Image 1 (cartoon, protein in one colour):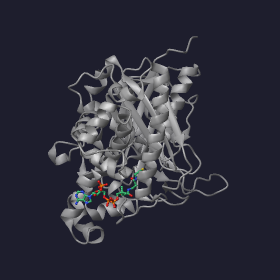
Image 2 (spheres, rainbow, N blue to C red):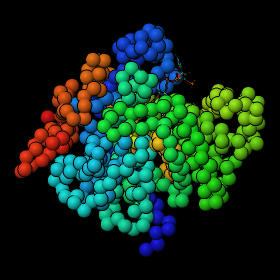
Image 3 (cartoon, protein in one colour):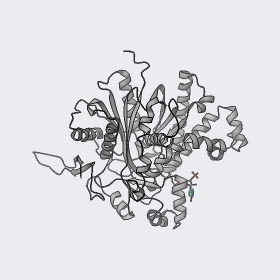
Image 4 (cartoon, rainbow, N blue to C red):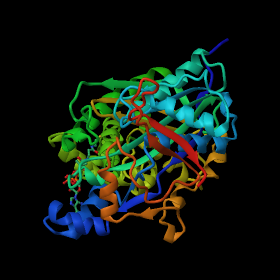
Length: 467
Ligand SMILES: CC(C)(COP(=O)(O)OP(=O)(O)OC[C@H]1O[C@@H](n2cnc3c(N)ncnc32)[C@H](O)[C@@H]1OP(=O)(O)O)[C@@H](O)C(=O)NCCC(=O)NCCS
């Protein structure tokens, strides 16, 4: 079989965001202002909404964790695409928060899907990829490579990114939490995005910007440093990607900006995508004399200016603002409502872009995917929007569903007391849910047996609850 020119990529996408959320502009801001902004509530709201870019953050209920979120996203993509789950032969999960120190979270998800659909998935490979927020991109790469190599025996692979992002209460990380999962159905001749063969580049550096030591449920993060490492790794991956594009399709760095119609970045918080855009677009424009001249005319000259100052000046230019509004901003709408979902954040950005531009015709356009995981690795890849992608977009109503129930959506706001109770629940207890599970996968109980007949202390039992 000639495998050289097969179109492989994303056929459908399922998103699941837990319904509970904290409104960062309401009670939370009043309670936190004394600790974070010396009592100035407006300053805290301004910082979170305008400076960081997020309004609401999704929170998991007591019966939810990243395995149930992953299974919900998987169910959504299976049901929406109408495939038979027995046509899946690989189920890879990317997660950095996981539910077990040994067992692959994909095996838990596989079990939930088997019991729910009444099928056997016994011959399905089910690995977990862990590398901070980039794990799902490594999972995607492996799924695509298997199909390209002809190693699959069934048409579909499922790649799921799922995380619950948690930082200690009352810290600068707290307002960049979130929770959610994105499931990508991967196959040949995909209906949404054809990943461009050979057009991807990876960079890895041994870094300490963000980590979560064994036994700890919150991450340790050197916030400002993590931004610098993200930008440096993304830039290095971009340079490597640009070289590949030039040799594969003859588009030089000076023309690369025009050849890309949308930039989706890893979004730990929406403002980060603006910093990444300044770095990436600044880099691309540096190869174009015309763009350089326009920037200089607008007060942003790379020569003689420290890099940070140059990027701040660049971010204020009309050239940047219009490029950002058109090619980046649509990817950030969902993140403002959800917060950081770690491994799924890039793919939530892709869905956001497709949903926000639903009135445009994107078929054939090139989308840049800039993936990043602390610790640290960046990957740049690109895809061409497939002709039938509208079949997915027409069915999307994620932004509407993310409105509070009182405004016609599906979400329930939490009081600070309820949120803090859920935040402080340990992984080793199943607390009381705010909403009893209903028509969803749920953590039903934790094992307690420790006898010669059966040992399951701490084992997580999941099931579908009709409610
Ligand atoms: C992201 C993080 C470092 C931000 O921390 P912070 O203490 O809130 O950061 P800052 O004080 O720099 O404020 C953030 C922005 O808000 C701006 N800001 C502050 N107050 C503001 C206000 N009232 N109105 C508008 N903007 C405001 C700041 O100027 C800054 O923007 P700038 O970079 O353009 O100067 C912190 O939330 C964190 O550690 N998050 C987790 C780690 C993470 O997500 N890393 C990303 C890489 S993976």
